[in-house]
Length: 240
Image (cartoon, rainbow, N blue to C red; front, side):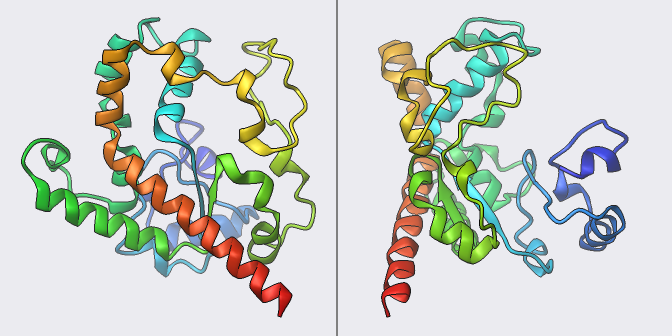
């Protein structure tokens, strides 16, 4: 993510903090062609004005959350607890993170994500779905083996072998001897290497995290449907 250099190597993935002019100017001057926005919301009021192709990817929310815990805490990357219950209490920033990212709610509306604020949640979900529908490509990590046609036609990559290559940039920090270095299906093909929330979490914690990620589960279902519908449309176009 280029803004690591822009911030003096302090952070990366915070494009919400930069104006569109700053983003385009810095991208051009640095020779970058891809900008990643990882930790801040997508600014629905202006980011679509950028001269860009918009791409994103989804993973099952509970799987993603447990993977984050494993990465941070079990493999000792700055986490101070090995207890998933304590960790989840402290990581409220991950609760419905997909929905917040694509709806870009105003500061101070956290309470809308719980309790009786039904209409507010409906509005946030509507915004998130509308935002997602404007992205040129929406990938699902479990379906990467089928993503090659869209990646080629929309992003322009001709070598799509990375879609079914297990990429582990931090493997030197914590070696995983899971016997799944080779992968031919995308993330759907590394079940042995992934932690299954139903196996790892106790019943109460599974229920709690699922409820805290309920909106993200809905948005992920929407993303998966978008991917599959566009895949079918791609096939129809090629057939005709």
